[in-house]
Length: 186
Image 1 (cartoon, one colour):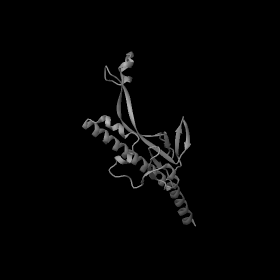
Image 2: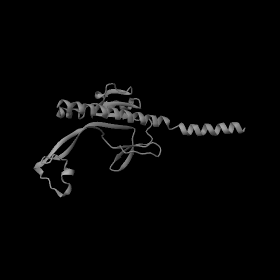
Image 3: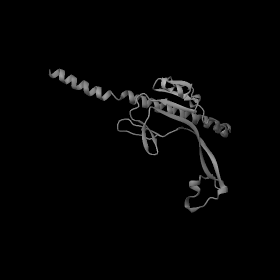
């Protein structure tokens, strides 16, 4: 009887301990793919700078980030319309042709929230878009405005120029995907 009770306690502890692994694995895979996507975008930026075609990278804005990968993940379903999303398998990526957004469908949505005006809303999908990131610089000094204005120097309006910093993969709505006690706003 003692042996059976001991085994039951150990089993209950182990089952409870390992119950979160599928959700943690999904989140880890999701983060790995988003990192690979940003690396693909960065590689395109590096090649554009190296060949003097920096202005041509703006054409990637709204493009399908999966097109920049050497090999797409096995759970990438392709270019689809959002009307088909309810029929798609979870833990999948697809490019929404109507909104030009890359979408991840969360399987274990516990802990996944969209953050809108500081309020969290449960979600079962996260959407991304490639966008151009710009900085304003002072033409006279060539420095970013935040640095040029430091020390009380005033930059005249006609000396402000917009410069392309790069292309980035950004969530269309900020999100929070908690893992146990850990929470990270992305």
